[in-house]
Amino acid sequence: MKTRTRFILVAQLGLALLILRENAFAQSTAAPAPGATKEAALQSILKEAIVPGYQDLAAKCHALTVALETGLTNSSAEQLDLSRKAWVTAALSARKIQWLQTGPIADREYLSSFYYSKVMPQRIEAILASPRPIDTAYVAEFGANARGLFAIEYLLFATNTTATSTPAATTTAGDAQPSRRMQYALLLARDLESKSKDLVGDWSASGDNTPASKFLGGGQQSLGLMVNQLAQFLEKIAEERVNFILLLPQPVSKQLARIEGSASGSTQLSALAMLQSGQSLYHHGLEGCVRHVNPTLADRLRRQFETAVSAVSSISIPLEVAAAGINRPALQSAYEKTRALEVAFKVDVASALGVTLTFTSGDGD
Image (cartoon, one colour):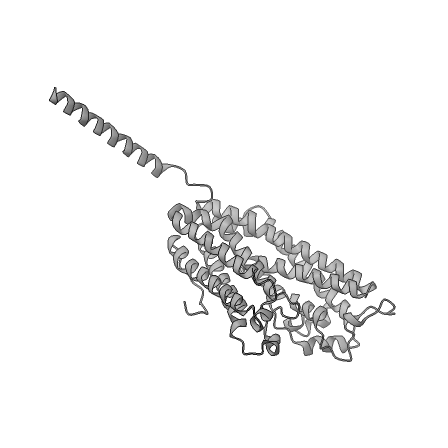
């Protein structure tokens, strides 16, 4: 009887071990979770981030063009306000796809049109003061410092204009001639609209040897590129958008010329849009790959993105205003949260996905 009982116990133990082995094998050979493969991640990034990002940019640039066209015949304060709002909306749309610094936007040399903010007021004012017609050829003579998205910001928001130009804010509905300032802004807006449409066409094209096919066929190289782009982007948000303002000497009001987007009061909105777009890129493309190899890390990064977004969102006023007043602790907290996210992404995510960061970090990491 004892021998029979022992035999049954051994048989049951053997069966249990067999079941455990089969379950382990099934788990090891099961299909990865959605978004876990490189191919699925790249497809998601293309369809959920890149293509809609440029489509939105083209739509917002078109809306800016329409607003400025109306401004040529209606120079009221109300129309100027609408044009300014259209500029902010277009700028925020550009911020949402700013993480992508390669591909057609670099190949076509369009990066400066959307992201070069170091405009030179003297050159812009020289164009406004000149009797020459404002056209593409004439404006091109003044270089990138007098063109692009941030030259439009200057034209719409600057208040320290010279007596030889007519600020949009002071034109009246009875002007015999449209403001040169609005003509100039409209010329630049049409250029941005054309370029953004080019980028939509580039990324939407099908067939071999297109940007989309090259991106999807890049495998680990494309995945590594996305990790590098997002890592560099997060550093830019933490250091150039938030910490830079914290480090400015007081009074901050005397440093506004050094702060990108301060003329339009869009610094907090820009930082938030950038951070949210980084969060979306991680969620739609990279999180699945991270979760497949390290679920705990995937959850932690998701929480860190949410914490950083909440910290920047809670400031709710331009960052330069926060730095000069009682909101400075909130700005400091936002930096700490974005900095922690940046470091975690650079160190942990890159390691989990087997990616080497190839860009030169500007913050000592």
